[in-house]
Length: 469
Image (cartoon, rainbow, N blue to C red; front, side, top):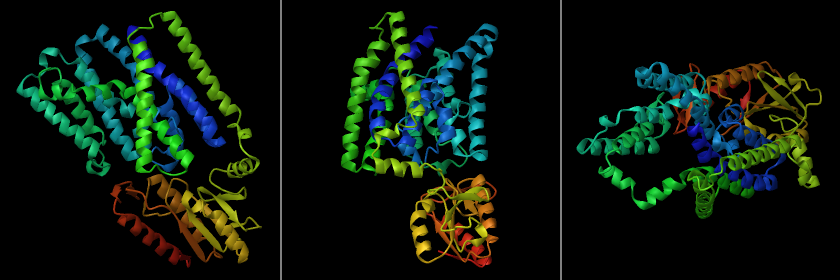
């Protein structure tokens, strides 16, 4: 129980402080839909399942992720779940099979690493990124070092060599693009490097250990948890307010702000609770439980109030209501189209067979829909928007195999529309990694593979007798 008490003292006070202060700008700045999502993320954070919530709700690498102030606490969810299960596992092995403890943890760590690789190949980046079974190997690596006998620790030259190798591995892991490692998790070099640094660091006289004891580095380590908590909300709220990315000067101000918040959080909240200068266990438990309950009630209230739309002006509320009619469609006139919904653009009959023009793509095509509806109306033409949010319209390459299935279905549906003469493509080129129809990863950092995919799509459309632009 002492272990769990230490973890609670380490994690919860600073986290509850962040939730309290982050909720204020969330209520002031976020649109109702985003505020509802924020409320859900608060509840997920307090129940230690933030990683599962964001796995189901978010593409971590998409632009939409930048409107989620608590997205970064997914990793805290993984950590909390690990800390709940791992001590119990160690206790069972220590009680019944003490000599098998280290081999068992090593085997489970390798199994988690294998699960990560398998998830990347089968399910894409999201499950491999967010879930405990596919991320436990990183924490398991640290557990293995902790369980190794102290008399096996390196000293002298061996410690120096291992420390240097660990430093290089960490730098490679930080600086390297994902494509360098194929199906191997990009975090693997950094994890191995960190394990080597910890193992070599048991020699207090090693060069690496002395370097890491430099006071500025030690201070960064001291505030690292609070800095982790504060960095993302500061960036998200700043960009949300400005409706754009931060310029270099603004990013510098944001770094100063998040560092200042982290220092204050560490000095007045994190350190007192960790050092037990607030020793009354019953009082701490009551206060912590009350704060957590208050945060949970606040999160639930944001959901139940439908994101507090009453905060908005009449015009903004009307726009928000219109946008909220359907996530994939900016107008309420939608119909089914293959595996995606299709938006009716000046098509009174709501029959796809009567359409003359199709707007095909993802959310980038979707944002053009109001403009194209106006153009089609002026020219007395009928059209459809066929979006597949989170995917590309290409069928030879795409973001995932499931996206290829959606794109193929949409293409077949469009091919059957005999009245459609023109297909307008709308998408983004910013996709470094794609997959082919077999699920094999393709390097698209130079954009060549996507260009080939578009050529293939245009050729297929031409085969259906349709012009694309």
